[in-house]
Length: 181
Image (tube, rainbow, N blue to C red; front, side, top):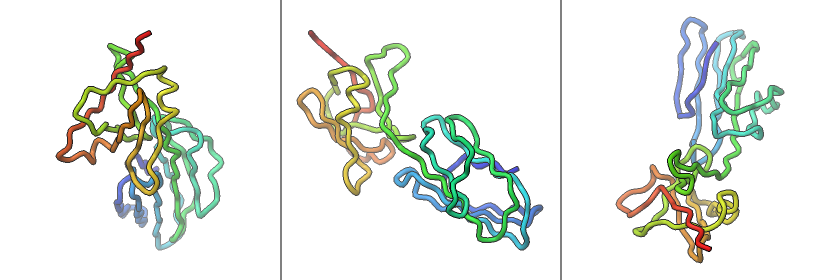
């Protein structure tokens, strides 16, 4: 079996099997990865693909353009057992969605995510949000053609970027929900 648990541009030469796998991806900006298999002769092996904790049942896996019938569920591996031939392609297409994670010691302090990506608020101020946790994300949108996001809340509009993309800017990754009545 070959286990794939990282989605990065990479190449594996499995000499014992006479198989080479090349992975192409722009993950996480593009929520997909493509694996191309090269082999001198048809070779049987099992490919196990990670379905991470942030993924959902809408994750698609295609082999040569045909959907894999196995159900995807978070924190598991999808198993594809077959005889592979040169030129076979496997494509994973993740359905990124917004979600938040409250801090264990204070459920009113949250971090926002898009798929696996921690989002950072571009701001010099403390981030105060209003509303219930589930309603906060209703006003969150991904910018067209960009890997940045906007959140309207508490009569403000916040710009968010992936935490890893923040450079030389003031930012915050935690927001406090404060609902004064």
